[in-house]
Every structure is written in structure tokens, then in C-alpha cells.
Image 1 (cartoon, rainbow, N blue to C red):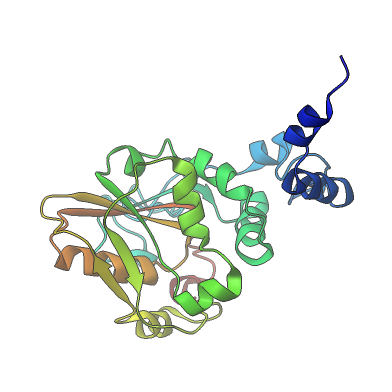
Image 2 (cartoon, rainbow, N blue to C red):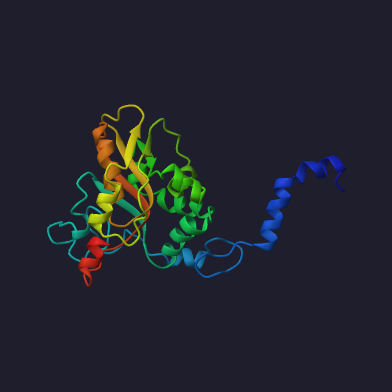
Length: 251
């Protein structure tokens, strides 16, 4: 049956028309292999290395060949004194690295749903009373247009919380900084807004954990407001490489 003018108007709006034109001229492509039709194709998604396989650091979930040695933590997380555990869905390599970079630096926001799907089953998400996204400073968020961690959190579909982390200091970009520089850079950068967290299990959500300096500073603030247990959940975890210890511990 042909559409009446009113039915046609109801179905084709300026927003849907623009969306259709964008999809026509700029169709989705897999951020890893370039295949048309999806932001991450099934073969590339299946190629991603899970951060739960192989020997892992019992604290930070990074690959660590000596993990079986009396449950020793890897050298990369010795400074994580405010974090109880780090949970991650994938190793920060291959397709997972391209997913992280495409969301953060290219604005492929549909990847937030892909990342949330991978994060949702993690124990840190399931056991948490509250999930809080690592915040961006308002100036950085204006430049980027969105907070990637907040986008992922929204895709998880959790009930919005009255509590939130704030970034009160506009820190320098941390890419290329070693651990000491990162810790100094983000010292005093965060604040907490909301009711007391006495007895709460709180999970800090981020797209990727590298040295953990940012997450540890967030965790410290949450503990000051009463959090009993603070974990970190992330889509990807940058791993420790024993062949280059100085680089991996401090970069």
C-alpha cells in the first residue's frame, strides 16, 4: 500500500534523512580490517585476546609469567595502593587497541556499545554497588565532544548514580609520560561529589588501564569518602613486558 503524505512525513524526518545520507556517503567500516557494514566485524572481534587467559598478575590483570610465584604482583602495579583489583576485557593490542583509539581519537562513538558488551560480564561490574566513569576536565571534553568512559558507562545501562567523580585540574596529556610523571601530573586532579560511600563497593570505569596512575588517584579520592572496596574495570589492559621492564613499568 502506498504511503500517504502524512505517513511519509512521519517516517522521514530531517534527522533520519541526514543520518541516511551520512550512512550512504560514509558507510560504517570495521576499525580493524576495513570491512564495510559494521564498526567491528565478527572475525576481528573474535581475534581479540581476552585479558582473562594465561598467567595474570593477581592484582592488575596484566599478563605476568611469574604470577604463579606465591601470588606475586607484577612490577607495574606496585604503586596501586588504593585499588583492590583491576578487571579488563581485553589485552591492549591488535584489534582491541584500534577499538580504543577509534573511540577516543576518531570519535567512533558506536564502539562504546561494543566495549560495554565486553565489559558487562566482568566480575568487577557484577559485584559493584556503583560504577563511576573516569572524568574528563570540562575543557578537554569540549575539545573531544564527549567522555569516552562516560559513553561506555551509559551503554552498560546501569541506573544513574547521584555520585560522580569530577576532574578539577586540567592535566597535561599523559601519552609518553613515565609513571612518576603521570602520578605527579594527576595528583590532586580529582574530586568526589555525592553522598558518603561508607561500606560501598565502587568500580571505576575507564576505556584502558596503562600504568594505573589515573585510576589509583581516583580510588584514593573515593576511599577518602568512605568506599570500602574500589576496583577498576576497563575494556583493555596494557600488559607488562619482561623483555623491556624499564619501559613497561614506567611508560
